[in-house]
Image (cartoon, rainbow, N blue to C red; front, side):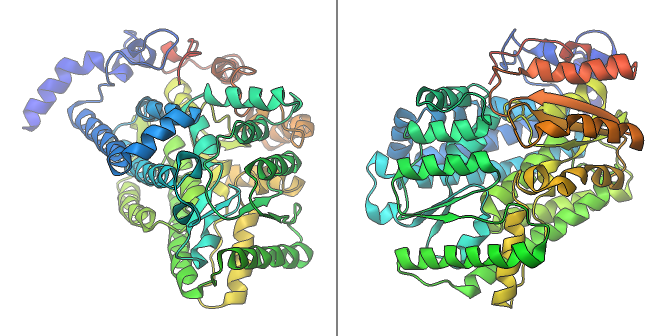
Length: 534
């Protein structure tokens, strides 16, 4: 069998985009129709990896089919009612694009983690649509949900085991912009048509547009809003809660929270009041036993995350690039200890990573030239940017800022300490701590990059973020003094019309070719038009 596989691989290697790029016969972009993300054929990765990749494609298809089979009427209504539902049809092309060039163990780890995301996400979509008042669901179904702002950790809802956590922006805004670069500009335009200024953060504008377009599923008895992560999102929360029209609790946590003596007691009290607000409106009581059980899941996940970091510092690991980032982001942002499935996935992945280290396994065939730390909120209309960096220039994104979110442990036996720990977890939420939590937190990038043995730092330069605009020249100076290669990558977070994917690639292309004088690994993906792609 081994000889047969070797024979097939030798005959079909001319279709392998990596072989094509190395031999001047084409590359990754050769497979695509112009301007699109539509491939003419699936990526050939060798017999074993291609079959594995395709089997995972079928499993993802099965998960989406199961979602429709369980709630066919609600899902069809969802497609009719919500524009963002149509974007999920691009999920398969999205996943294919994420893992271009992946082979061996990095391909397997990536698909294991992605399948967990797909299963959790499809289950949440189906359950939410089946409970959505806009689609005709009863109050009995809708009232089981606790809708809350996406930067509040879902772990806090596990104290109410009979209720369903619903990070409100996750489906129509937070996840879908990763899949489809064209969806959020519509909602941004909706917000601006109501008079919102055009120079605000595109994430805040998009969330506001979703609310004004009545595109949030209508579930729950109350709404938990917050001032996180920044001043612009505080205004967004005001627009959202007015449009949704549910009784709300505004969880105004301390913005500058490094001084725990003053910030932590205040924010912990906010956390207690938030829980009491739910108890009052849902006529229920907080269940410490249920919370502690979920906290154990969260602690185990965070323990594995810290161990992953130890391997990632060495480079002998298959936990790489965008697969690591997306998994950690979803695990924290959307499940956060509430889904035991992710703990099981982590256990399987850790066995692989431990073996990788023992075997001194190098991902991507050892073609990595530089190790980079990617800092700042990423352009979510270009989710596969780390994959492109590796395939084009051999730059491995070792860790992303979003992966450094809350990783502290939660007490599982002391209620008062557990609230404090839960508050610390909230303070390290997405974009909350490292981007707008104070200068010391932003400046920590150099320590992170040093600890992970990176020779390069890439700074995501969100051109509409008022909080980050003033640090550009300071970071340039520090990079030079500390000896890091440093690239500012302009983007507009969720609006690809302002700064395109190619504009982002050019930031890297110019530095790698002009400053470092290096040649690309795959010339076909240096400059190309993907403006019509998902």
